[in-house]
Image (cartoon, rainbow, N blue to C red; front, side):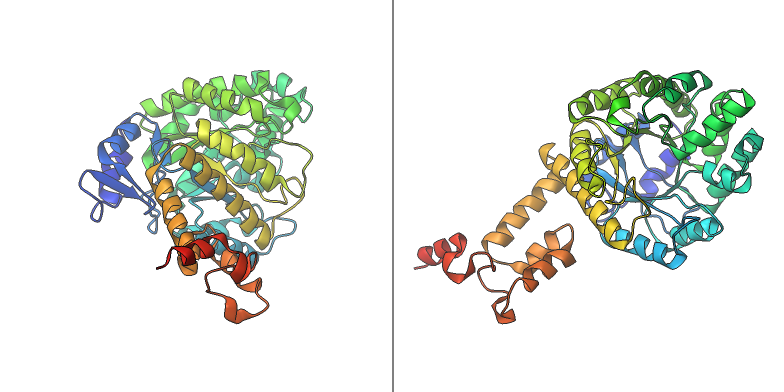
Length: 432
Protein backbone atom coordinates (compact mmCIF):
# COMPACT_ATOMS: atom_id res chain seq x y z
CA UNK A 1 0.00 0.00 0.00
CA UNK A 2 1.40 3.38 -0.98
CA UNK A 3 0.08 6.74 0.12
CA UNK A 4 1.24 9.91 1.83
CA UNK A 5 0.65 8.28 5.23
CA UNK A 6 3.41 5.79 4.35
CA UNK A 7 5.71 8.71 3.53
CA UNK A 8 4.99 10.57 6.75
CA UNK A 9 4.93 7.53 9.04
CA UNK A 10 8.64 7.64 9.84
CA UNK A 11 8.58 11.41 10.15
CA UNK A 12 5.83 11.51 12.76
CA UNK A 13 6.31 8.50 15.04
CA UNK A 14 8.71 8.83 17.93
CA UNK A 15 12.16 7.53 17.07
CA UNK A 16 14.62 9.70 18.98
CA UNK A 17 14.42 8.05 22.40
CA UNK A 18 14.06 4.42 21.30
CA UNK A 19 16.73 1.77 20.73
CA UNK A 20 18.19 1.76 17.24
CA UNK A 21 15.94 -0.04 14.78
CA UNK A 22 12.80 0.41 16.88
CA UNK A 23 9.82 2.75 16.72
CA UNK A 24 7.56 3.92 19.51
CA UNK A 25 3.91 4.79 19.05
CA UNK A 26 2.06 6.47 21.94
CA UNK A 27 4.85 5.67 24.39
CA UNK A 28 3.47 2.25 25.33
CA UNK A 29 5.45 -0.09 23.14
CA UNK A 30 8.62 -0.43 21.17
CA UNK A 31 8.16 -2.15 17.81
CA UNK A 32 10.96 -3.22 15.45
CA UNK A 33 10.96 -0.57 12.74
CA UNK A 34 11.19 -3.07 9.89
CA UNK A 35 8.18 -4.97 11.32
CA UNK A 36 6.10 -1.82 11.68
CA UNK A 37 6.82 -0.52 8.19
CA UNK A 38 6.30 -3.88 6.48
CA UNK A 39 3.00 -4.50 8.32
CA UNK A 40 1.87 -0.97 7.50
CA UNK A 41 2.74 -1.42 3.83
CA UNK A 42 0.82 -4.71 3.76
CA UNK A 43 -2.28 -3.08 5.27
CA UNK A 44 -2.04 -5.14 8.47
CA UNK A 45 -1.33 -2.02 10.56
CA UNK A 46 -3.32 1.20 10.35
CA UNK A 47 -2.07 4.50 11.76
CA UNK A 48 -5.09 6.84 11.63
CA UNK A 49 -3.50 10.23 11.12
CA UNK A 50 -5.11 13.15 9.35
CA UNK A 51 -2.37 15.72 8.71
CA UNK A 52 -4.90 18.38 9.68
CA UNK A 53 -5.14 17.05 13.25
CA UNK A 54 -2.36 19.19 14.70
CA UNK A 55 -2.44 17.77 18.23
CA UNK A 56 -2.31 14.14 17.13
CA UNK A 57 0.06 11.64 18.71
CA UNK A 58 0.00 8.62 16.44
CA UNK A 59 -1.25 5.18 17.48
CA UNK A 60 -0.68 1.98 15.57
CA UNK A 61 -3.57 -0.47 15.26
CA UNK A 62 -2.60 -3.99 14.27
CA UNK A 63 -1.51 -7.37 15.58
CA UNK A 64 2.14 -6.37 15.93
CA UNK A 65 1.10 -3.45 18.16
CA UNK A 66 -0.45 -3.46 21.61
CA UNK A 67 -4.20 -4.05 21.63
CA UNK A 68 -5.89 -0.67 21.61
CA UNK A 69 -9.12 0.48 23.26
CA UNK A 70 -11.61 2.95 21.80
CA UNK A 71 -14.23 4.93 23.70
CA UNK A 72 -17.48 6.25 22.27
CA UNK A 73 -18.47 9.70 23.51
CA UNK A 74 -20.84 12.28 22.12
CA UNK A 75 -23.63 14.73 22.72
CA UNK A 76 -27.16 13.37 22.45
CA UNK A 77 -30.22 15.14 21.15
CA UNK A 78 -32.21 13.82 24.13
CA UNK A 79 -30.38 13.76 27.45
CA UNK A 80 -26.73 14.82 27.27
CA UNK A 81 -25.03 17.99 28.38
CA UNK A 82 -22.20 19.57 26.38
CA UNK A 83 -20.01 20.20 29.44
CA UNK A 84 -20.65 16.72 30.87
CA UNK A 85 -19.57 15.12 27.59
CA UNK A 86 -16.37 17.16 27.74
CA UNK A 87 -15.79 15.85 31.27
CA UNK A 88 -16.27 12.26 30.08
CA UNK A 89 -13.76 12.77 27.27
CA UNK A 90 -11.19 14.22 29.67
CA UNK A 91 -11.62 11.27 32.04
CA UNK A 92 -11.27 8.75 29.20
CA UNK A 93 -8.09 10.45 28.03
CA UNK A 94 -6.68 10.55 31.56
CA UNK A 95 -7.37 6.82 32.01
CA UNK A 96 -5.52 6.00 28.81
CA UNK A 97 -8.06 5.39 26.03
CA UNK A 98 -6.21 5.01 22.74
CA UNK A 99 -8.82 6.38 20.34
CA UNK A 100 -12.17 8.10 20.58
CA UNK A 101 -15.22 7.99 18.36
CA UNK A 102 -17.46 11.02 18.41
CA UNK A 103 -21.02 9.74 18.06
CA UNK A 104 -22.61 13.16 18.56
CA UNK A 105 -25.97 14.07 17.13
CA UNK A 106 -27.94 17.29 17.43
CA UNK A 107 -27.03 20.98 17.46
CA UNK A 108 -23.79 20.64 19.45
CA UNK A 109 -22.30 17.88 17.31
CA UNK A 110 -19.89 20.04 15.32
CA UNK A 111 -18.52 22.13 18.22
CA UNK A 112 -18.02 18.97 20.26
CA UNK A 113 -16.02 17.40 17.42
CA UNK A 114 -13.94 20.59 17.23
CA UNK A 115 -13.30 20.33 20.97
CA UNK A 116 -12.06 16.74 20.66
CA UNK A 117 -9.72 17.60 17.78
CA UNK A 118 -8.29 20.71 19.43
CA UNK A 119 -7.84 19.45 22.98
CA UNK A 120 -6.61 15.85 22.68
CA UNK A 121 -3.75 13.95 21.07
CA UNK A 122 -5.60 10.70 20.31
CA UNK A 123 -7.01 9.74 16.90
CA UNK A 124 -10.61 10.91 16.53
CA UNK A 125 -13.19 8.94 14.59
CA UNK A 126 -16.72 9.75 13.46
CA UNK A 127 -19.73 8.27 11.67
CA UNK A 128 -20.39 10.94 9.01
CA UNK A 129 -23.84 9.61 8.09
CA UNK A 130 -25.04 10.93 11.47
CA UNK A 131 -24.29 14.45 10.25
CA UNK A 132 -26.15 13.81 7.00
CA UNK A 133 -29.15 12.45 8.90
CA UNK A 134 -29.08 15.52 11.14
CA UNK A 135 -29.18 17.84 8.13
CA UNK A 136 -31.65 15.77 6.13
CA UNK A 137 -34.04 14.03 8.56
CA UNK A 138 -35.81 12.20 5.72
CA UNK A 139 -32.59 10.37 4.89
CA UNK A 140 -33.96 8.93 1.63
CA UNK A 141 -33.84 12.47 0.24
CA UNK A 142 -30.06 12.59 0.66
CA UNK A 143 -27.97 12.19 -2.47
CA UNK A 144 -24.54 10.58 -2.71
CA UNK A 145 -23.16 14.12 -2.97
CA UNK A 146 -24.82 14.96 0.37
CA UNK A 147 -23.07 12.00 2.02
CA UNK A 148 -19.79 13.00 0.39
CA UNK A 149 -20.17 16.63 1.48
CA UNK A 150 -20.33 15.65 5.15
CA UNK A 151 -17.41 13.23 4.84
CA UNK A 152 -15.29 15.96 3.28
CA UNK A 153 -16.26 18.63 5.82
CA UNK A 154 -15.20 16.34 8.66
CA UNK A 155 -12.01 15.41 6.82
CA UNK A 156 -11.15 19.11 6.55
CA UNK A 157 -11.74 19.50 10.29
CA UNK A 158 -9.03 16.90 10.97
CA UNK A 159 -10.95 13.67 11.69
CA UNK A 160 -8.53 10.72 11.53
CA UNK A 161 -10.82 7.75 10.83
CA UNK A 162 -14.42 7.36 9.76
CA UNK A 163 -16.95 4.57 10.07
CA UNK A 164 -18.54 4.21 6.64
CA UNK A 165 -21.05 1.40 6.08
CA UNK A 166 -20.05 0.64 2.51
CA UNK A 167 -20.27 -3.15 2.77
CA UNK A 168 -24.04 -3.20 3.31
CA UNK A 169 -25.82 -3.98 0.03
CA UNK A 170 -29.43 -4.04 -1.04
CA UNK A 171 -29.16 -7.80 -1.54
CA UNK A 172 -28.53 -8.20 2.20
CA UNK A 173 -31.75 -6.48 3.29
CA UNK A 174 -34.04 -9.49 3.21
CA UNK A 175 -31.72 -11.59 5.39
CA UNK A 176 -31.13 -8.74 7.84
CA UNK A 177 -34.77 -7.79 8.30
CA UNK A 178 -35.73 -11.42 8.93
CA UNK A 179 -33.51 -11.67 12.03
CA UNK A 180 -34.57 -11.81 15.67
CA UNK A 181 -33.18 -8.28 16.20
CA UNK A 182 -33.03 -7.01 12.64
CA UNK A 183 -30.54 -4.13 12.17
CA UNK A 184 -29.14 -2.57 15.36
CA UNK A 185 -26.56 -0.26 13.78
CA UNK A 186 -27.69 3.37 13.62
CA UNK A 187 -25.76 3.94 10.40
CA UNK A 188 -27.07 0.66 9.05
CA UNK A 189 -30.66 1.67 9.79
CA UNK A 190 -30.22 4.99 7.96
CA UNK A 191 -28.85 3.25 4.87
CA UNK A 192 -31.47 0.48 5.03
CA UNK A 193 -34.15 3.17 5.05
CA UNK A 194 -32.46 4.89 2.09
CA UNK A 195 -32.37 1.65 0.07
CA UNK A 196 -35.92 0.59 0.98
CA UNK A 197 -37.45 3.95 0.14
CA UNK A 198 -35.50 4.56 -3.07
CA UNK A 199 -35.13 0.95 -4.20
CA UNK A 200 -31.55 1.69 -5.14
CA UNK A 201 -28.17 0.29 -4.15
CA UNK A 202 -26.32 1.72 -1.14
CA UNK A 203 -24.58 4.74 -2.71
CA UNK A 204 -21.52 4.32 -0.46
CA UNK A 205 -21.05 0.91 -2.06
CA UNK A 206 -22.12 1.73 -5.61
CA UNK A 207 -19.78 4.74 -5.81
CA UNK A 208 -17.04 3.44 -3.56
CA UNK A 209 -14.20 4.51 -5.87
CA UNK A 210 -15.28 8.16 -5.68
CA UNK A 211 -15.40 7.83 -1.90
CA UNK A 212 -11.88 6.40 -1.89
CA UNK A 213 -10.60 9.34 -3.92
CA UNK A 214 -11.83 11.72 -1.25
CA UNK A 215 -10.41 9.67 1.62
CA UNK A 216 -7.05 9.37 -0.15
CA UNK A 217 -6.82 13.14 -0.63
CA UNK A 218 -7.19 13.73 3.10
CA UNK A 219 -5.30 10.66 4.44
CA UNK A 220 -8.44 9.41 6.19
CA UNK A 221 -8.47 5.83 7.47
CA UNK A 222 -11.73 4.14 6.54
CA UNK A 223 -13.23 1.97 9.23
CA UNK A 224 -15.58 -0.13 7.14
CA UNK A 225 -18.64 -0.37 9.34
CA UNK A 226 -20.57 -3.54 10.09
CA UNK A 227 -24.11 -2.36 9.51
CA UNK A 228 -25.28 -5.95 9.95
CA UNK A 229 -23.52 -6.80 13.19
CA UNK A 230 -25.71 -9.14 15.26
CA UNK A 231 -27.62 -7.44 18.06
CA UNK A 232 -28.58 -10.76 19.63
CA UNK A 233 -26.85 -14.09 20.12
CA UNK A 234 -29.71 -15.54 18.03
CA UNK A 235 -28.38 -13.65 15.01
CA UNK A 236 -24.68 -14.36 15.52
CA UNK A 237 -22.63 -15.66 12.60
CA UNK A 238 -25.63 -15.66 10.27
CA UNK A 239 -25.90 -15.24 6.51
CA UNK A 240 -26.42 -11.47 6.70
CA UNK A 241 -23.35 -10.89 8.88
CA UNK A 242 -21.01 -12.97 6.75
CA UNK A 243 -22.39 -11.74 3.41
CA UNK A 244 -21.55 -8.20 4.50
CA UNK A 245 -18.10 -9.32 5.69
CA UNK A 246 -17.37 -10.90 2.30
CA UNK A 247 -18.31 -7.64 0.60
CA UNK A 248 -16.14 -5.71 3.07
CA UNK A 249 -13.21 -7.98 2.16
CA UNK A 250 -13.50 -6.92 -1.48
CA UNK A 251 -13.74 -3.25 -0.50
CA UNK A 252 -10.67 -3.61 1.72
CA UNK A 253 -8.61 -4.81 -1.26
CA UNK A 254 -9.86 -1.91 -3.37
CA UNK A 255 -9.04 0.61 -0.64
CA UNK A 256 -5.53 -0.75 -0.19
CA UNK A 257 -4.97 -0.64 -3.94
CA UNK A 258 -5.98 3.04 -3.85
CA UNK A 259 -3.60 3.76 -0.96
CA UNK A 260 -6.31 4.21 1.70
CA UNK A 261 -5.73 2.76 5.16
CA UNK A 262 -8.43 0.36 6.36
CA UNK A 263 -9.83 -0.97 9.60
CA UNK A 264 -12.69 -3.47 9.51
CA UNK A 265 -15.45 -3.30 12.10
CA UNK A 266 -16.89 -6.47 13.58
CA UNK A 267 -19.54 -8.00 15.81
CA UNK A 268 -21.60 -7.44 17.96
CA UNK A 269 -23.29 -10.15 20.02
CA UNK A 270 -21.38 -13.43 19.61
CA UNK A 271 -21.38 -16.47 21.93
CA UNK A 272 -18.00 -17.27 23.42
CA UNK A 273 -17.44 -20.46 21.42
CA UNK A 274 -17.89 -18.63 18.09
CA UNK A 275 -15.45 -15.76 18.72
CA UNK A 276 -12.30 -17.53 17.53
CA UNK A 277 -14.00 -18.57 14.28
CA UNK A 278 -15.24 -15.02 13.68
CA UNK A 279 -11.81 -13.48 14.25
CA UNK A 280 -10.05 -15.98 11.99
CA UNK A 281 -12.65 -15.60 9.26
CA UNK A 282 -12.17 -11.83 9.18
CA UNK A 283 -8.37 -12.11 9.16
CA UNK A 284 -8.48 -14.60 6.30
CA UNK A 285 -11.01 -12.74 4.15
CA UNK A 286 -9.60 -9.25 4.75
CA UNK A 287 -5.91 -10.09 4.46
CA UNK A 288 -5.12 -9.30 8.09
CA UNK A 289 -6.53 -5.77 8.01
CA UNK A 290 -6.93 -4.52 11.61
CA UNK A 291 -10.16 -5.78 13.15
CA UNK A 292 -12.08 -3.25 15.28
CA UNK A 293 -14.72 -5.01 17.40
CA UNK A 294 -17.59 -3.91 19.61
CA UNK A 295 -17.36 -6.31 22.54
CA UNK A 296 -18.31 -8.93 21.48
CA UNK A 297 -21.14 -9.25 24.00
CA UNK A 298 -21.34 -12.91 25.04
CA UNK A 299 -24.61 -12.88 27.03
CA UNK A 300 -27.83 -11.04 26.16
CA UNK A 301 -29.36 -10.95 29.64
CA UNK A 302 -26.91 -8.90 31.72
CA UNK A 303 -28.25 -5.37 31.23
CA UNK A 304 -26.51 -3.07 33.69
CA UNK A 305 -23.40 -5.25 33.56
CA UNK A 306 -22.71 -5.38 29.84
CA UNK A 307 -19.24 -3.91 30.36
CA UNK A 308 -18.45 -7.28 31.96
CA UNK A 309 -20.13 -9.48 29.35
CA UNK A 310 -18.45 -7.49 26.59
CA UNK A 311 -15.01 -7.43 28.24
CA UNK A 312 -15.10 -11.23 28.47
CA UNK A 313 -15.77 -11.39 24.74
CA UNK A 314 -13.20 -8.69 24.01
CA UNK A 315 -10.45 -10.65 25.76
CA UNK A 316 -11.13 -13.67 23.56
CA UNK A 317 -11.41 -11.48 20.47
CA UNK A 318 -8.09 -9.72 21.11
CA UNK A 319 -6.33 -13.02 21.76
CA UNK A 320 -7.65 -14.52 18.51
CA UNK A 321 -7.24 -11.60 16.11
CA UNK A 322 -8.82 -8.25 17.04
CA UNK A 323 -6.56 -5.18 17.22
CA UNK A 324 -8.91 -2.44 18.47
CA UNK A 325 -11.60 -2.97 21.11
CA UNK A 326 -14.56 -0.62 21.31
CA UNK A 327 -15.59 -0.33 24.93
CA UNK A 328 -19.05 -1.07 26.27
CA UNK A 329 -20.37 0.60 29.42
CA UNK A 330 -22.81 -0.64 32.09
CA UNK A 331 -25.48 1.52 30.41
CA UNK A 332 -25.25 -0.33 27.06
CA UNK A 333 -28.79 -1.14 25.85
CA UNK A 334 -30.19 1.11 28.61
CA UNK A 335 -29.20 4.73 28.09
CA UNK A 336 -26.52 7.39 27.79
CA UNK A 337 -23.54 6.57 30.05
CA UNK A 338 -22.52 8.94 32.84
CA UNK A 339 -19.02 9.66 34.10
CA UNK A 340 -18.77 6.54 36.27
CA UNK A 341 -20.09 4.37 33.43
CA UNK A 342 -17.31 5.66 31.19
CA UNK A 343 -14.75 4.81 33.86
CA UNK A 344 -16.13 1.31 34.42
CA UNK A 345 -16.40 0.54 30.72
CA UNK A 346 -12.96 1.84 29.79
CA UNK A 347 -11.15 0.05 32.62
CA UNK A 348 -12.96 -3.21 31.88
CA UNK A 349 -11.75 -3.02 28.29
CA UNK A 350 -8.22 -2.00 29.22
CA UNK A 351 -8.16 -5.13 31.39
CA UNK A 352 -9.33 -7.16 28.38
CA UNK A 353 -6.68 -5.65 26.08
CA UNK A 354 -3.85 -6.11 28.57
CA UNK A 355 -4.93 -9.65 29.46
CA UNK A 356 -4.87 -10.64 25.79
CA UNK A 357 -1.47 -9.01 25.26
CA UNK A 358 -0.04 -10.87 28.27
CA UNK A 359 -1.26 -14.15 26.80
CA UNK A 360 0.22 -13.20 23.42
CA UNK A 361 3.59 -12.57 25.08
CA UNK A 362 3.86 -8.90 24.13
CA UNK A 363 6.96 -7.49 25.88
CA UNK A 364 5.41 -4.27 27.20
CA UNK A 365 2.63 -6.25 28.91
CA UNK A 366 5.01 -8.78 30.49
CA UNK A 367 7.29 -6.01 31.78
CA UNK A 368 4.34 -4.43 33.54
CA UNK A 369 3.40 -7.68 35.29
CA UNK A 370 6.98 -8.22 36.45
CA UNK A 371 7.16 -4.69 37.82
CA UNK A 372 3.93 -5.20 39.75
CA UNK A 373 5.16 -8.45 41.30
CA UNK A 374 8.31 -6.71 42.51
CA UNK A 375 6.35 -3.74 43.90
CA UNK A 376 3.91 -5.99 45.76
CA UNK A 377 6.60 -8.22 47.20
CA UNK A 378 8.42 -5.17 48.55
CA UNK A 379 5.29 -3.32 49.73
CA UNK A 380 6.01 -0.34 47.47
CA UNK A 381 2.48 0.95 47.49
CA UNK A 382 2.94 4.04 45.32
CA UNK A 383 4.69 1.97 42.66
CA UNK A 384 1.78 -0.46 42.75
CA UNK A 385 -0.75 2.33 42.28
CA UNK A 386 1.22 3.78 39.37
CA UNK A 387 1.24 0.41 37.61
CA UNK A 388 -2.53 -0.04 37.98
CA UNK A 389 -4.89 0.70 35.10
CA UNK A 390 -6.80 3.08 37.40
CA UNK A 391 -4.28 4.43 39.94
CA UNK A 392 -6.75 6.76 41.64
CA UNK A 393 -9.30 4.03 42.30
CA UNK A 394 -6.61 1.62 43.62
CA UNK A 395 -5.26 4.26 46.01
CA UNK A 396 -8.77 5.19 47.12
CA UNK A 397 -9.68 1.58 47.96
CA UNK A 398 -6.40 0.93 49.75
CA UNK A 399 -6.44 4.04 51.92
CA UNK A 400 -10.17 3.85 52.60
CA UNK A 401 -9.89 0.32 53.99
CA UNK A 402 -8.03 1.40 57.14
CA UNK A 403 -9.89 2.61 60.20
CA UNK A 404 -6.55 3.94 61.44
CA UNK A 405 -5.03 6.02 58.62
CA UNK A 406 -1.58 5.81 60.20
CA UNK A 407 -1.39 2.13 59.19
CA UNK A 408 -1.40 2.97 55.49
CA UNK A 409 2.00 2.47 53.89
CA UNK A 410 3.12 -0.34 56.19
CA UNK A 411 4.10 -3.87 55.14
CA UNK A 412 0.51 -5.17 55.10
CA UNK A 413 -2.97 -4.29 53.91
CA UNK A 414 -6.23 -4.27 55.88
CA UNK A 415 -7.14 -7.77 54.68
CA UNK A 416 -4.39 -9.60 56.63
CA UNK A 417 -3.14 -6.93 58.98
CA UNK A 418 0.34 -6.95 60.56
CA UNK A 419 0.11 -10.47 62.02
CA UNK A 420 -1.29 -12.54 59.15
CA UNK A 421 0.34 -11.21 55.97
CA UNK A 422 2.26 -14.14 54.39
CA UNK A 423 4.73 -11.94 52.50
CA UNK A 424 5.48 -9.82 55.58
CA UNK A 425 6.00 -12.91 57.74
CA UNK A 426 8.40 -14.48 55.24
CA UNK A 427 10.24 -11.19 54.77
CA UNK A 428 10.73 -10.93 58.50
CA UNK A 429 11.72 -14.61 58.83
CA UNK A 430 14.41 -14.24 56.17
CA UNK A 431 15.87 -11.08 57.70
CA UNK A 432 19.08 -11.95 59.65
